[in-house]
Image 1 (spheres, rainbow, N blue to C red):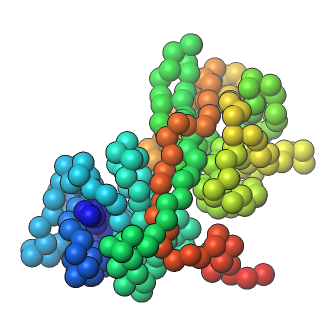
Image 2: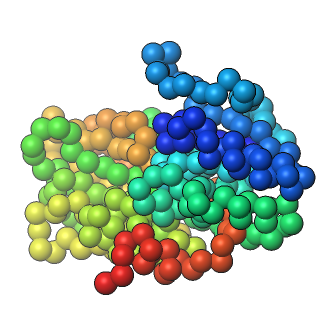
Length: 288
């Protein structure tokens, strides 16, 4: 078995967690290599240990069985982009504040020995294909594990939005934007905006208005096979911004259609602890 360890160096200072994980895995007969998930900025002041042989992540993943990433949910989302095309399952170690998607906390690294014994499961998570169409042409496409978020810019004004399911009107409202989320993303921005918490292994599309200026704008949970569309209903020079899984914003122009539908891709997460989703929710958010 070969495991790629991918620490976010801004979270895993000195790569201490990754080095500990490598030692645990190698003692159990697992080949483990450490790869940074992204290239560091030339002006970065991060000090990386000289004794660690850092490998190119793309090259190492081609022959890997599992990818273990160290950081917050953002690190896991980034890792999924690398692992999914190769059909490699991802195991997250939480070094962030909440980390809903992470399976392990930093103090549970000893459980990695279960990988060598094959004592783990795989959980599949639904994803969304997100596209922007402009005058009939697709000008943007991305795949989301968490969500696609449409928001206003920095100027203090509201957006007039229409949301459709299979081109049939679902909701129209004015507000700061809308979140189109997967069940995995239901505990992220969607939840903060008042959306429902959905079991992550479910297959639904969640529509959550952001700060809607209407008593009638409510969250919706749609069937997985719906094609969800969003467009601005007002004319003029208003524009909005689309961000997929917290990535770089894409500017949406009046007349553009944002379309979200279930992807054929899925993210595969490694399960080691046996903790249920409800236990994790209570642990992360606190019991009522």
